[in-house]
Image (cartoon, rainbow, N blue to C red; front, side, top):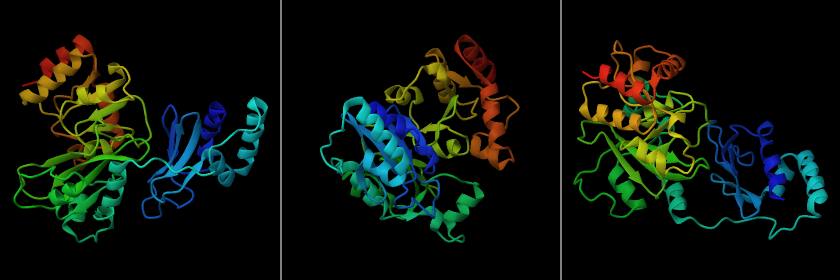
Length: 335
């Protein structure tokens, strides 16, 4: 029964927006029931996933849950009829526990979704707002951003006691990190002033903090140190700082090291950056070693300098190396 449903789930792309297969038994797309959404057409919170030996549908925006067969019947009756005929031919009339399925409550995820509603969508702020002016200056686009004037207090409503140090709260841009299904696993807050901590990361689950899992995938997969840089590059992923290789190797969709290109900041004088690059090269990852003539520190700066995102992606691929070749290039590159 499951493999038949799975084949028809893979055909949903002709009937929904932003369709993407995010795992062996998981598909995401813009929910056709609630629209998902007019203001942000890139949203994809409809989710088809496997539970035991059948597929289920759930929308993380409107909350509708159904067995996949019932969802397909409403969306594309002709496909549903074809699927029913195949199911009957395979094993007789399919059995069901219930017409509609209510997924088990995942407290952390549910809390985070509701808490996001308590802060502002940064794209909805007026153009004269300082945050929107920052977004315009940095030429940010196609990245999910929220805004809160009280970042530390807001995080503590999700994970009590997460932050106890700062005596004075502060406003920050909030960047959600999502699984391929749309479920939020944490956030990163970007400072808007001269805070000593430019980026503050708050993980809400044990999942590795990898940004971009809910984006369409493209090969080769380029991984950056931060979401803002990754947002400009097609299919790119990002970590929230830390050791990129450690986070990737904890990820359930991790492939072979050579199938990733790690693009660290262009900091040839930084001993810490050089050390991380050499460590990753020894582990078998492809490493981007930026051209020595390149002046900009990161992708966002390259965009501000007038470079096209597609050209930046091509430059990263052309200047990526593995093994001893990567180690040699890094040694020549560092200053």
